[in-house]
Length: 251
Image 1 (cartoon, rainbow, N blue to C red):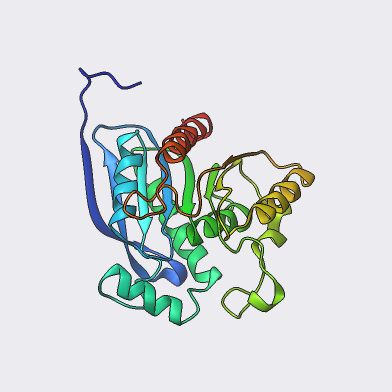
Image 2: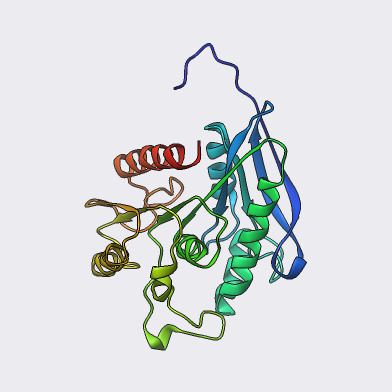
């Protein structure tokens, strides 16, 4: 609970971590001042790239008492503005799921090794990052909580599969090993409401601990205040539900 007389402080900076195959990759890291111990969150950026929005998200999560880190999943593919890098990655069919998961694991390992860590780590992602967050909750064993925001292509048709994305993420549903919070807009077309229904039903049939919330007046990217997709009431409620979920599972 925030009070106006409390002390607040934060350190935020770009750093370098070990990612997939031991590669050195860039990451943006923010932490509260003080010795902790603090829980951690790995933020998985969207296909618009490792952009200013995700730096702000990282600082916002740190502001709420977490060691927050956002690895640059595209740093091998290109350098430059987030828009140019994302365009190059999109033209090349995205990054491979294995590479992304290796980088996400590396980011989790980095924060868990810090002396100020409480030993628990969650992950949060939007759009393609939501897809990667769900994959990470299924294929990695490091996470204690997963926040999937409007994950596109969690359910893929056979003609959408590729060498880089060879398996539809929902095929791993039975392997989800952490509680999952899902936030979705009912005006979205990636995923569609029907795909969200299928995703939720498959998770429930597998007996997973999940909490799904749908927003009737929101579409894709409704957290993104810098884009036309922003929907303020849904975003405010979604952030509140996310921080409640993270606190329950990580603090």
